[in-house]
Image (cartoon, rainbow, N blue to C red; front, side, top):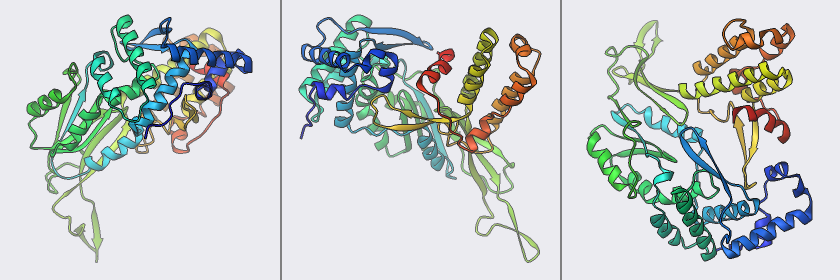
Length: 429
């Protein structure tokens, strides 16, 4: 049975977010909010007669978009809600996926790990094929389908892409587009584990899989127009767990990065136990070594955190605003709650929650702590020399109390007002 998916004043008014009110003070006026909603109803009924208002910007090398007209944003937020209800998508967090991966990696049998990346994913989605898949959703109203089709046609004409990165409906549309591919990969007999996070794939298979044949079969199963990025793909082969004595302690037999984590598969000789004053190997396991999996933050993620610290201290060197510097360091080393744009879910985020699958003690977090201490106490170097004279002993004592490792292990929480939060993160945009 199709849910009621009306684009009326009552439905659209529920899609305002807290961020909207911070960005536009006029929204505190009921009369003004009503006007915005009325415009949204009209736009939805007439299917954007004047086109869609949007901004474009680059994130890395990829072009992203955002709808600039609030009334149109409300429409696309409502569409995204309708799509999620119809598609019944369940997204796992990065840390949840990382914990699942660990379970499969710890197995002592031989296996292969495929790391694959879909090249220019959003840019190469075929709008006509996607339209067919959206039209086949039985739980989605015709009005929602017409709005989504109009959006795809508009952006294909203006920007050459049917699914623009960053627009409210794009994430769930991309999931719908690859749903049959995901089902195909998961159903293959030789696949032990499969995970896809947008365009980033991780597959664990039996060791008997032939790399070239397997990748070719997967690429053929992708929707037409999509290809794997050969430069980013890699295959890691993990051999059967060795016999005791034939492997060095702490031997890394496989390592790779995925979703901001570094996974290391380690084979170690089983520890010895004492029995009746005689040394014996663990019962029932004397012929095997022990396999463990270490999960830490990836070096790429460490680099991003260091860059944020550098930008915070550089901004301090220019403005002399010590309180803002302190809040930025506090922000990076603690945790907080994030409310999703549709107000449906409160998500804890921060140094712990973004990387909760990591093992402690974390070498990478310790490295970041060391880098923070360098920024605080060093008088040399191009960056520290710009602000060293502005950091008194008292200020250094305050700043050195902040720690990424401590914030992670103790799940330290800190609240910031929206205005202060906006000021804190503006230096990293």
